[in-house]
Each structure stands twice: as structure tokens, then as C-alpha cells.
Image (cartoon, rainbow, N blue to C red; front, side, top):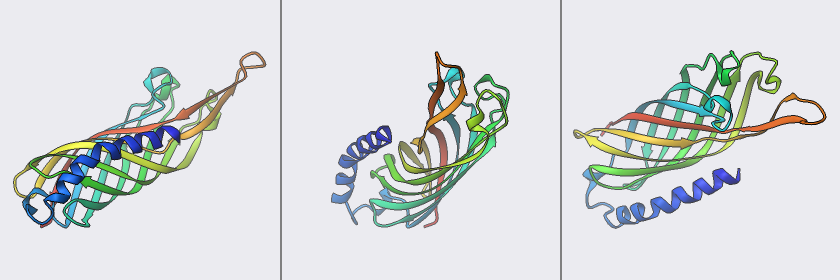
Length: 206
């Protein structure tokens, strides 16, 4: 949780100059901003618990975003992502892993053809793991709720389109216990941190 808050603070700090500049140009350069309604489709790689062996997971997600402008600087975004390619050998243990997410975000974007963007909001992540005796606490489906933050950059393509690259940090499932290794080593505990690196196409409806 502390790590998520730190990332959120750094993201907002990074966005302040861009938002300040955009606010000065409010209403002057409407072509520099998306329209009041826009849609996006994104595809990317999900990593869960990258500090564990095998560098975490190898999951591919497809996401759909609906955005509604609040002004030329800020917008609200609703996002749903689902796994389209799961990890069938999670952590080398030979069982499947996937993760879906649902979130509501406040987004800020700088003006210009090439722009920077940041998002902060609240999300639910549904983690799904197969049966395996090595990680009994991971079996089944588990919902994790909390802060989600992200930063990215984009370039406009034509009058209504844009291509964006984004890094998102989703809520962390803390202190997951795995197998008890006995009195000398005890029970292994670890965190399931979920990241998403994605490429998306944005289409403005107006």
C-alpha cells in the first residue's frame, strides 16, 4: 500500500506541470485535446509478483476504455480488462494464472500532438489461479481492491485518433502465504503486485 501511494504521489507530481500548462490554454486550443467522449482499446502484458522466481507471470490482457471529458484538461475513464492469454506455467509450477480488472479513473493529459497522460483511480483486480500444492493460498479466484495509478505518453493520428503507451500499477495482494517449510524456515509470505504495460488506440467521438 505504501508503494502504491508513493507511485501515486510521484505520478501526480509528474503531471502538475502538464496540467498547469493545459489549464492556461483552457478553451484556446480545443484541437489539442480529445473530444468530450472517447473510446480506447488496449493490449498489454500483465506481471504478477515479479520479485518471485520466473519473473512473475506471463499474461496478456485486452482492455476497453470509455472516457468522458470534464474539461480540456481532465476526464473520467471507465476501464475493463480481461485475460486473453493466460500463463499456463505460472512461476514454473505448471498451473494457470490470469487476472481481470475493473476501474474508474481520473485522467489528465497535456496538450499537443505528442502528449503525456496520467491516471489515478480505484480498481478491482480478480486474480485466478489453478490448483497446485506448492501455493495452496493462491488456488481459486480472489478479488483485490485499492488504488491504481498510471503514466503514459501518446501521439495523435489524424483528427480523431491517437496511439498511447502506458504503464499501470494496480492494487497489491499483500502477505500471501504459501507452503509451510517447517520450524526452521516457517511459512513463505509474498506480495502479488500487478503491473500492466500496454499499447492502445484511442478514438474520439467528436
